[in-house]
Image 1 (cartoon, rainbow over the protein chains, first blue to last red):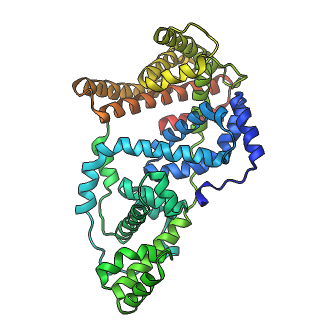
Image 2: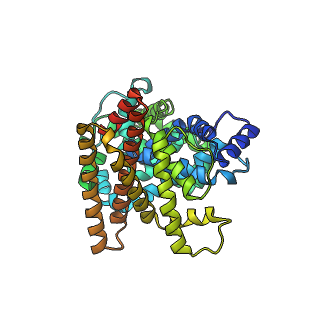
Image 3: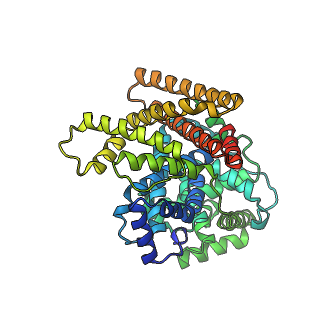
Length: 203
Length: 228
């Protein structure tokens, strides 16, 4: 499970958790410095917004701060925080679903054009920035499975448990995401749905 | 096997996770189909590129926000550790939040003991986030407005302009909620606007702190985040 791998010993984790639980500011900052980057990376890609990711990262660490006294070392602190971050992302995406559904679906289906016969994609030639932007433009459902599988390295059975879906659904969502990314990366979709819907929904 | 039965299997094929018989059938089709071969190559490239994406780094101001908010939480739970002495102004603000928080919790819960207030306070905050935000905003506003003379006119103006925009969003969201009390999106917009306001006030507080302690670099960093 690549996404949850954190180099720390159980004893060190437990000690850090206990210090955080006692309100030791150095310990809490140490917890943040050790894990914020990985969690932020996950959250940004899950919710496709840096601004939202910062808010969610804050919520994750505040929840962790509140609950760290309950940490018993059954998993590593990294895994414990990671699960919390995934759950915060899923809660957020569920809340956003209703608002976004109509815009995303219409562009999702109508905006997709089969790419013309252009050169094949070569992994080393795909720019990271292009890929990040393309991932942002995926519909929430398949983006979540794609990020967890292809970017974070989880197995389908793990994703199925995390998302409460079947293993088959996880596989088909990852396939759907890759198919859409292929279209986007080959220039088959001219307008970013995320940008359009963000502008339309701005308060 | 034809293209329409082959293509849905191609992602699992490039992940090398097909059953042996399916794999053989896919490979037989791929030998004779240029289009599916190109698709398999593209899917494989996307998977490889995604697996080698670089980690991203959160902006430094996120930690300041979290530290200040954790302090609020700590005080609100009635737990008083040696916490963030380096933010004297924030400490004053959070003490005010604590006082108001305990008062509100007192009226809500009518507690008859003070021995285990922590979890109850946390539950109240979780069950009534709007009250929590409103309270935090009120106390933060009190302290930041009292100390705003530390800031130059231009900065104070920019912060106030930002607050005005957020206040308008709050007013709009509240109006939307009044007409549609069940609307999840209106509720979410309201919370988002309240969160933005708390964040901006916390950053303002951080800025005031840095100005007071003469940390120009820290002040400049927070200022650039506020202006962002």
